[in-house]
Length: 117
Image 1: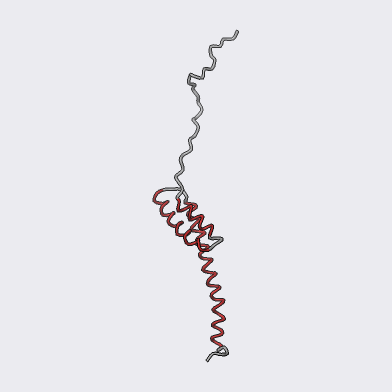
Image 2: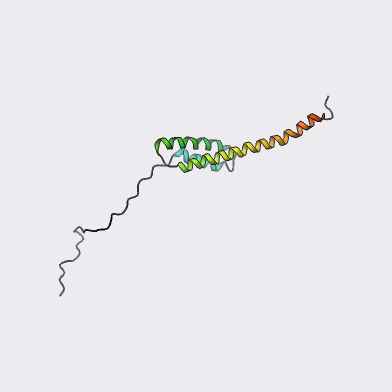
């Protein structure tokens, strides 16, 4: 019969040459201003009014992230970029619409429209 002197005993520690399983490092918490600024900037694609608060919160988040080392830098940068694009587009649209209404008024005033003294 075979000698069973080397039977596995779960109570005895075993030596292993395998490396221990890696432990995930704790990620820094995400900055709240970055998250809210990103959401507001995305929402400004539908309504223009939330672009400026999203832009401001994005800038505040970038400053706070630089000081504290929190996460969310990418969201803060996206909030600032989207916010500036929306604000720029809004200003450009307002200028174009303004000129479209202003040019006919200037032409009418320069030609002396009937009924003017």
